[in-house]
Length: 163
Image (cartoon, rainbow, N blue to C red):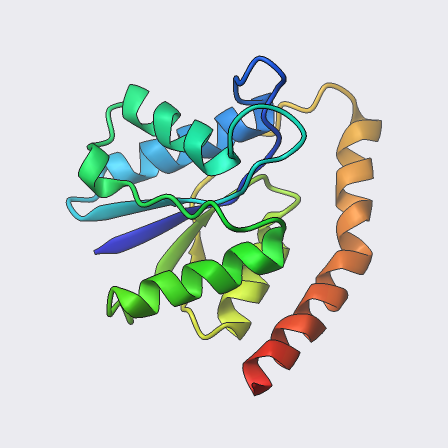
């Protein structure tokens, strides 16, 4: 089994995936198509609109040709940290001890990989295509948002590992 953890993003009011969510799922589907034992782990609970992020991602994965038995939703995560913790527990229950792959946006990838590694998972990135952000100011907003989030979440993950 080769787990591909897909980190959630917004769902639109009409229950469709946001562009970021769609790009994350499409990257995971492309990557997983080349693996005979891919296991997709879409993460994310219900946000402001529509169904849970994991549910919307699972439907999109099926539309893109992923076999339903290769998709295991993780709908309890409300943020990156809780999604990593939930996926770690799910993978332990499945007896998985090998590497995992993270599918997310380019700006979010360093935090996801760091948290997965602190959680004890050998994490690698899913290759992602070029960013499609409309404006450079928007790209920098998301990158700058990660600056305080990375050490904050890393400290929390270390704290959770103690217990």
